[in-house]
Length: 347
Image 1 (tube, rainbow, N blue to C red):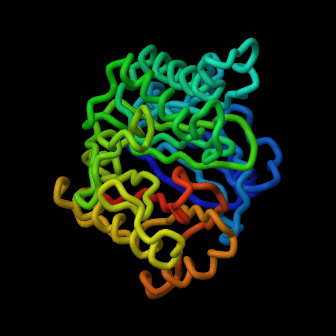
Image 2 (image 1 turned 90 degrees about the vertical axis):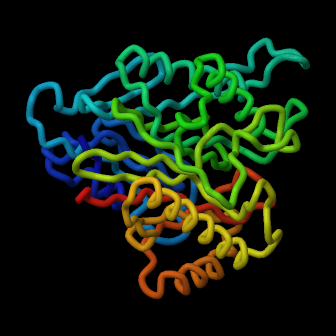
């Protein structure tokens, strides 16, 4: 079992040889203009989020690294409901896009919001799929929705999303803290509710940040239902250690720090990433390093890009391996969020 991640322009994905494409489990692609269609069998989400820097590497490709050539370990395609997925017998990568308008018909003033309904539908479909196919362990989820900080139906849209997600997690008995996946939730200017997910057959370890309160324990000020994710997920096997780090921001305890200060928020975010990695290394007896990773950096305001880049340059003391994407963060007072995945061979 294993997985590799490669970062490249979307055009380069299309130019890869067939043997390489046959190993692709899924793709997450950013950019204002939707690229030409990928191999129709590959699960992919195309997100209307402007790439501010690192234009040549706006596409994140997840590939099966299985060396077993038996039929059970070959990458196979599938569809169920609105989900498109691929699996290699150990890992499953899927994507689902749902239009909120499809859930708005006949709604009344007191009805559940279309976003909550769409979120519940998406997660119900995801869990039905992985239960049916036997991939019970949740590693990583990516969630993207329009106008994440806007208010509708009397509540911020991110909070509608949290209500829908947690409703399904609770009803499916998946709210145990040690089983919650790493995740992010970002806002786009437009588009459907888009979710990509990676699950598998090997148990993983949920990693929390000692500097932060667990998100699912946040106080009621953050909404009627708390965000439901772990700060990171650690996956170990005999050949590879993989740490999936959730979208990480300038939060200590449960509070946002350094309001309106992009430089300080960037430094605080890096401190949180270091703390998560340190905790993962303690648990796994490994030596994972942030310097060995490729970063996805979400910037709320394009004018903050240069300052954030300068802070990252100071931290890394050299080339910054990252793509910078303009997106809204889940809290309106957060200016930057960083996510990454770190891998190393198991000795």
